[in-house]
Image 1 (cartoon, rainbow, N blue to C red):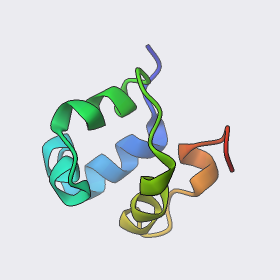
Image 2: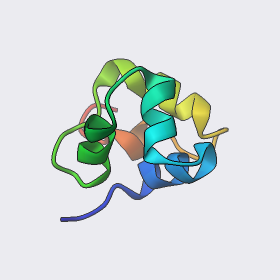
Image 3: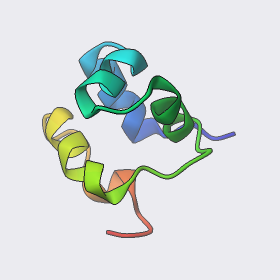
Image 4: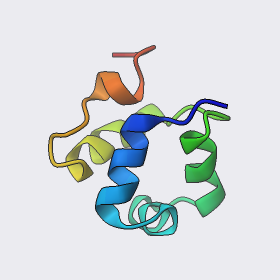
Length: 67
């Protein structure tokens, strides 16, 4: 499976998948599913993720099917 490179940048910035899950208020498996492309990132979390990236990632990078 293809990994979500944009989301991996955010994971690296915050420290780990577990830490990102805690920040977002979701489970670690949810974030893992997004990273490995098994599930799509919920649109309601895209703005928060873009913010966490410090401008390095855009909404289009995370969900090109929506933005």
